[in-house]
Image 1 (tube, rainbow, N blue to C red):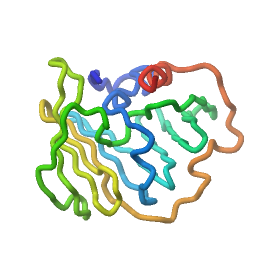
Image 2: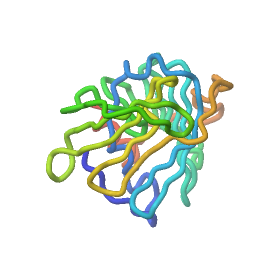
Image 3: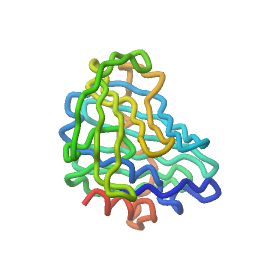
Image 4: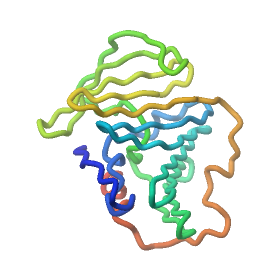
Length: 207
């Protein structure tokens, strides 16, 4: 779970999507999620990376945009696949979804070394249980995080690391109203078998 620094001058795939290394998820954790979409904000020091997150009946979609364009990750537990879509090339790569999911979604890993609830707070309009969590990773072998889990949505909506100025959170959450096509590869896109540095890293992290 080591997280390399963000290099804004590099393309998303050449820098390997550093946020993919943040947290690893297990599939059952999302089974009861409420349908919603939200703005995602990733903050690392004085740098921020905005994106969008979509949830529907266990299916997930993530979008990030930077100077190189937009990249989309769709997770389909029902089909046991992950689709990585590159709109610039109008291509997508299909990866097998095994035990673990990509790490760009906030989650308390079930294999966390420790987890304890320390309170309840309102975060971005939702009453949330606040947890202190220790996970394997980092230079010392242990990384401490604070995670807020929205009671209504049944998912974490904010995470902050203790050792540095880093955070992820879902803002402007809107429930319902999602089209099923959001969770499918776009029509006309070509399926490729050539993995990028980003997808190679994703494949390794999902093993």
